[in-house]
Amino acid sequence: QVQLVESGGGVVQPGRSLRLSCVASGFTFSSYPMHWVRQAPGKGLEWVAVIAYDGSIKLYADSVKGRFTISRDDSKNTLYLQMNSLRDEDTAMYYCARDPRAGQPDYLDYWGQGILVTVSS
Amino acid sequence: EVVLTQSPGTLSLSPGERATLSCRASQSVSNSYFAWYQQKPGQAPRLLMYGVSSRASGIPDRFSGSGSGTDSSLTISRLEPEDFAVYYCQLYGGSPLIIFGQGTRLEIK
Image 1 (tube, rainbow over the protein chains, first blue to last red):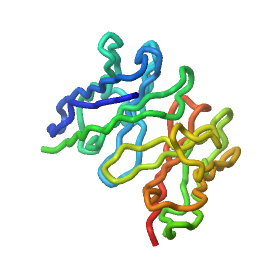
Image 2 (image 1 turned 60 degrees about the vertical axis):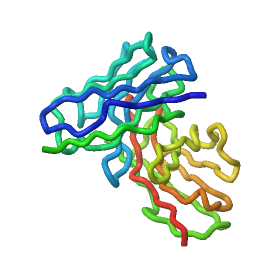
Image 3 (image 1 turned 90 degrees about the horizontal axis):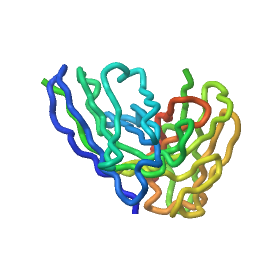
Image 4 (image 1 turned 60 degrees about the horizontal axis):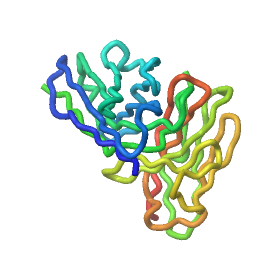
């Protein structure tokens, strides 16, 4: 069965960096676009970034553009989110999610359990 | 910038009743579709519906979707205790970005 497992979260000071990972299993990882979506405490869902199945296209929300970088290593079935210059408002649960089709960003059919990132001094 | 507005913000109903949740886009986006997700406390969102009226794998048929253009609705025909959760709509397909609504909380009356 499809599984997505995030890791790498924790407490970090403003201005510092953190890298999240998402290990995928149960499907051919290299065939699917992948997303990061976050949720601040008590708030709704906010889309963060997407990477095409072949890594050729990467798109970001305006709120993280220039600070976050999405990448993938298909040999490790792993999705990454490098987060630099972190701000208080980046505090959230971060989810990786699978996009079932290539092309324009789509609905998200499988989600990881999430990993918490807390930005605080 | 397209904004998705969900209504109502909170819906209070009893098990066995029918629930109708709405989602409206602030402007028309060509070739776009709506999806719906359910999120329970402490859990990740779960895909319920996509492409207007297609149910995701394993979703019971008491869930249905409808709508066109800038509007979408999610209907739960007879509420079960496990259906009380927060529901999010999402717009996809016609834009390079993904947009979520702010959510509707479905609570037990």
